[in-house]
Length: 101
Image (cartoon, rainbow, N blue to C red; front, side):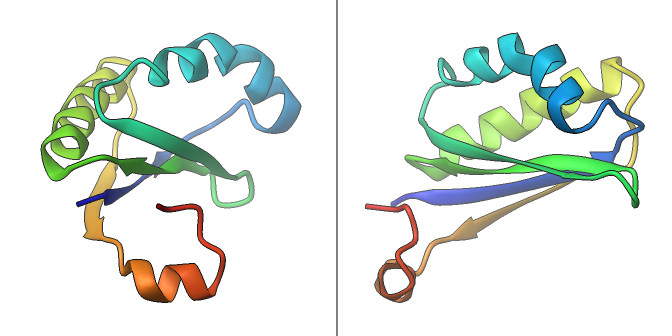
């Protein structure tokens, strides 16, 4: 069963197009993570937060990614990392054209 992972953390930038240029290589590497289906990148410059919403094939993949990603962020000096794994209610999501199969 697909699992949704929501992650956010304190982030001082860059944001917007500058973030896209700086993190394209990282974004491409995420496509190689086991079990990943997609990621939506999130950012809030006013609140100094960034993160993402991910869809994984299963809970094991989501947990493994959260552990790896949290360690990577911590090594980069990022703190206040929040990560949550959710089940996806597929019938209701389909009503709202959510991108899950």
